[in-house]
Image 1 (cartoon, rainbow, N blue to C red):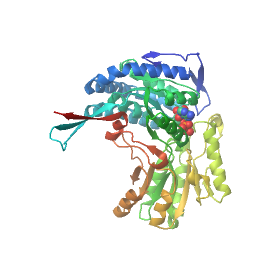
Image 2 (tube, helix red, strand yellow; image 1 turned 135 degrees about the vertical axis):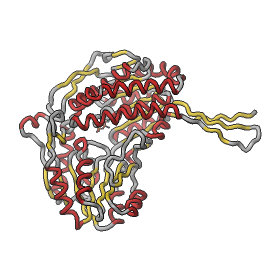
Image 3 (cartoon, helix red, strand yellow; image 1 turned 45 degrees about the horizontal axis):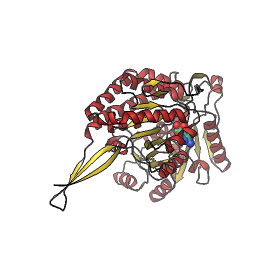
Image 4 (cartoon, protein in one colour; image 1 turned 30 degrees about the vertical axis):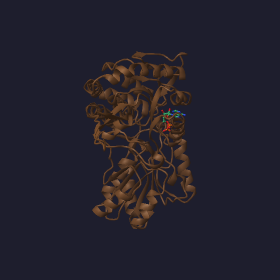
Length: 475
Ligand code: ADP
């Protein structure tokens, strides 16, 4: 753990194992931090806050630039550690490191653009000034599916705003977090400004984040269930919170879309990170008369994807993160098949040769998927593509919106008015129009409904770490 600028063991010396999900091998042991360790990190962040928040924005920016530079130099090492610890293919890991570094660079720049405002008053003697100030000590909890970029997406705007931070990464991917903190150490970010507490059981540490009065804001990426629990705890203590939670993205193919282009896009985004992404399509809507042609094109592409260890050349599908993830996928597929879905390809755990040691599930295509099935409602977080037939434009928008989630949606059409109608009527925070990667450090990422609140990245991302203060001056 990295607390107050020093690498520390857990207070009781406890450790836990970190596994490679492709091989089942133990990679390393890391500190199993306690609520007491978290409290020590929070105290360190508190002590560092006044000095850090009093630096000029230009100074803080320099630290973020330094971290960005080191991160770019270490891109290959970080990517390799990520592939070993999280399982995604090396090319995807490199892309993620780049995406993660982008947040350091973007917020190094945004630090200098934290503008206030002056507001005319109705009283001749009065002047209004609006000042933006950092919220204080931030508690951050990150997931395992994007174990590097989810750290910088929170830490960079927090630091740019003048906050200090304590991070608890996911128990499946602490090594990526440790590598990132080595970078922050090398960038000479002052002691206490960034702190890392690794832990195996997130519950006790989560409680400390909620109840410790020094923490003024929580930022969380993970499941909707845990997000709701944290939000209710934050409400009790009136802490600020931003949440990036689950999704159930619709992928709508209109009948004027190029079926090959649409199938290509759908495969790429569905199987990205083996389906373990909150923006992963969970329902692929295709006009009834196009289902057969689309499914054939889609399935040919799926069958061409090689599953295996992300370190091996040509591998496109890595393992799932662990046994529970495999069971969830198996359960959803069994449920769909028992209710009339048709299995086009996949539908089983992969156990050939060395794959049996890891958590591999075959890329799977289901058709005849209907709303009675679990997969129509629940986030899969795995490599299963459910194809659903629809009959008209109004029908499909209604079906797409029929979910508690509201993170990402995708639309394929060549018709500008259909594209605009879908963009306006879909109740999701991010809409890709003929585009499967509507994400960037420069663009606001986040969901509506049960997919969360607040935005990360972009000009908006820094606001999550700022308070608005009004000054009324009588002269
Ligand atoms: P997933 O199902 O994708 O693993 P989680 O929401 O369980 O999603 O995990 C995301 C992050 O939330 C991880 O860092 C995990 O340790 C953390 N987490 C899980 N449960 C709790 C909890 N009760 N309190 C605080 N953090 C938690």
